[in-house]
Image (cartoon, rainbow, N blue to C red):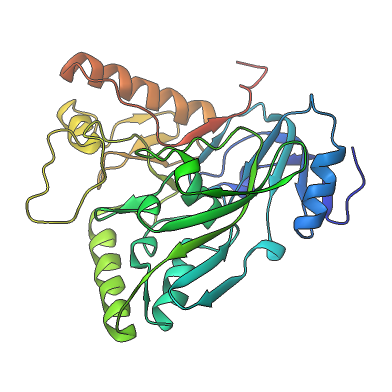
Length: 306
């Protein structure tokens, strides 16, 4: 391993770094001090060693056998938020909700980020969105470090965004993003976010250990929040129709409140959670003839014990 200025830890358990609180250890966990540290580390790292960037673990299942390679987790050196007219620059480690609130204070509308769990890096990588608005609608450019340690700037078009998808190459680490935000009244923007939070809390199991929506909507878009929103091709509706609301497997459960949320209900393993997800996919395939695609990212190896 190269010798960085940041923290480099061997055999680091990852369960406490994910919202679902499951997963085995990473061979190495690297927390760079700043962008220069990240560039030097990746530039000096053997090209054969896999690299896995993670954020705050809000959309992640780490399998019980852990991760062979280097997990990179950005921290305080990557959480800045700055404003220049209608441009908002946010570090990849800045929390989505924090960016939304700070932007609203400046009279800038990035309110769609308020109810998205996690940090900016993950939101950009997954083209996160809700209520009909997505990262791709606001992004101007992203800054990243390539697997071989080069700093690059990518346009929104370069990212190849789709529904819950981007073309960012494996092993590249997003460091910051620049958004364009429409102007608005700060008080009205904060009120809008409070309404969004109330609607989210009324329909989602926000007090349970989840990783957000488990599967992508076959409809190909998020809930719009409008009165004309339809549910026939929403993942939660298909799971409900398959009789799996509240279904349990080991310590894992599909939420009673929102059946597209996978919950660590009682000391679940990653294998419990992934197995339940695969059972849900099988039952929906049988009942509706549709193939649910995972939205939660699953990485790592299964437990050696099976």
